Length: 384
Image (cartoon, rainbow, N blue to C red):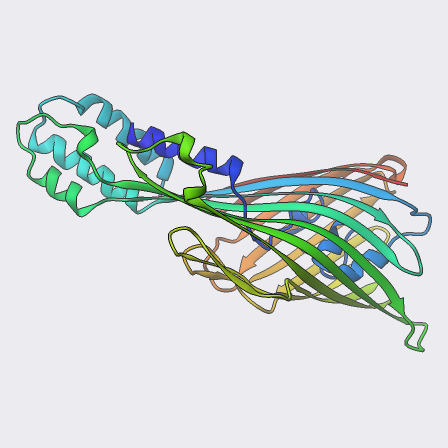
């Protein structure tokens, strides 16, 4: 049925598509609202700000970490309305319908068109070799963002408005589901070092990340009659481009307080879906301040530039997070993320970490908003 196919379409895209989203999922950073421009571990935070790669602990010689996470958002009970519509269409398909039946289907189609479903997923694998001269982090990551929407066509509205005591055929409906998304796959090498500035109380660090990016877009629109799951990976609905890009970052440290500034994706470029919809890859400039103590870590980040979302809306985030460390064996974390543009719902996050002997690492994060937004992130790692 139409709505069942819509749900299948959304799920399939979640597996095959991706995004140029600015979100970096990690079991630690995600629990702290995604903050990390001026603090956090020297591996994952180096993706947010290349200069963080130099801020490793004494005794760190090698680290490897695997992070992944996801967050999903449902607007206006999109799935529940879809289930209700599916049940109603199953009952009426091929049967004689009354005016009340047609009006009920029309109301559900209209309600479904006012909702949406979106999901974001990210994963990265990093290998770090800290060094006082030049600290390096090699990483591979992929992020994805997808959305599913429903369009109630004028033809269906007229069809249902004039349907009286005659067989109702679902295949006559022209309303369509559209699923779209875009991905960036990155392979990058972070390089960072400390620059002497003549004052032992202050430490300036600079970082750079040359990286290769593959950008893939997908846009698929189908009605109930012409939907075909096998077409999702067809070249007809996808585009793919590859480019080189660059991140820059700096930190200024005074004792345990750190100031950070980063600029990611310095090479801006506009891509398009097969339908001609723009997919911009824009530079994201962020600043941060953090206190990185032995027991307490407190971080605050602010995006100076906005990120454009699918559909043309913009988001610009402020992020804050705290961590309590218990003898390098266990951690508790809290975080908050606020969109200054008011496009994306605020989220709160929490997490726990286990790091026996400060060698093995397992970190978990949960993300929740006031509406139907849920997310989670997980990190495994070894730090020698």
